[in-house]
Length: 70
Image (cartoon, rainbow, N blue to C red):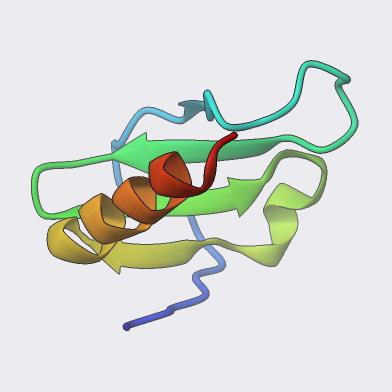
């Protein structure tokens, strides 16, 4: 798995609140989904950068999360 922390926003990928974030407002993550990769960042600490996942890695993570839902 390739995890990369980036400190600039030179790309044009649109960020949006993840549907997996709770509705409480305090524990939110944002995602930017592109054709080849997906980026994830903490909404409250955007300045710390983001994690980058390849498309297969992101699909695998979502499959695992869905399988663990009650």
